[in-house]
Length: 314
Image (cartoon, rainbow, N blue to C red; front, top):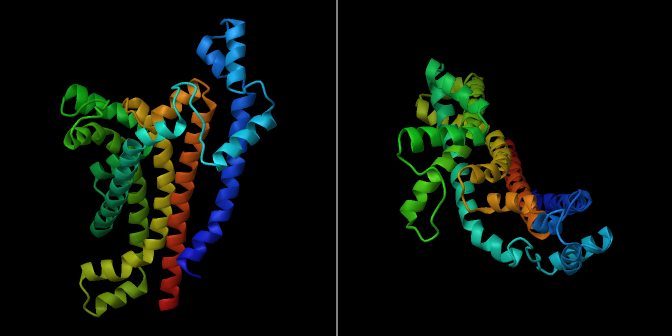
């Protein structure tokens, strides 16, 4: 079965899950006490003003009516209007997507490249140094938001080398890169430790197999054995794990953007949730879920394809 057929077969369950996820999330927002009107005017606000806002936003309709209307608009490409910002949800997403996308992609690339490189280094040395082992354990134990605070204290307060947060929209690319460097490290370093541990264990186990000894007996250099025989063997599980890491990076972006005061989709989602801005919160939650599912589906499908080709080749 080709790669594209595998993707198509996995898209249908993904779409069904997204529909169920939207229904569950919509119900959670609707049935929890309070709404955007109370978040705007307060529970002691003018009763007539509260009612006018609820009527304007169709908050006085039943759950089924509101959900079906929202679903019909979504099918037509209308994401609704944000009650908190007073602009279309699509406009807010388009404005803030580049920053979050850059942060997530940079973190993912750093986590993948760094994790595999450290894993190869550990496998080549056959043992870990005390300092490297301690560093990996610390990174595994620290959540991204706490690591972000530590990085701010070290490199923005103790040694003022990098900005502690925020970003100027009109700043040059080099200035923007300096602003997202610490957030990228906060997101990527824990994932580097996870992937390095996994790669180290997989490489160590693979290097002890008979076919590696056979390749060495044929006079193949250690680098050739690693690149031509060992790494292709563990490529499939590494890809599957990297897909799971993409899910952690998407969820971690929400909190890390808040810690570093970055105007991305993560901070926008937290503001929308706090203000009970249903159209904005739903659109962003679905966007995060879609990105996570697509990343994991793509990685798992690619890993399955690579594994199947290796089996057919052998």
